[in-house]
Length: 159
Image: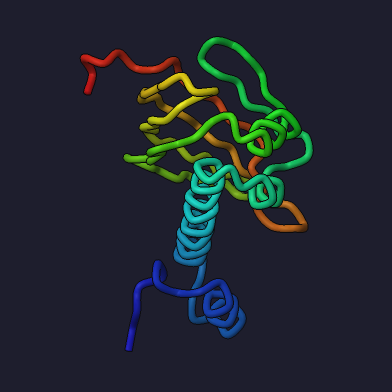
């Protein structure tokens, strides 16, 4: 039975490469699809951890030298985000990403998505939609989230 490279695990791809059943661009495509799936799931896990204020999960996913640049130009480090999560000042009613796309180039992956968030920050209500791009890099420890950039909140009329 022939199956699609997209459905193969990394181990299955390695075996097929080793025995010569998959060559050239098919192998590259299969590996990139596998990596895209891994990174997409990692980004989903990261967004869920932010929503829950789960600093431990966030710490495992974020690179030590992580940086986030917001649409206003403010820069946040890994420590900034973890401190914010531990403080529990931000409470999310909803934080969901839509239109997620993952593009992989070797050991680098870029996730773009439209984020919708609603909740309170120190008791003050917020609700916004914005675009973000998250950059992941493959390290010896696995994929790590190294850089994020967020747009300004979109105008309410754009909904």
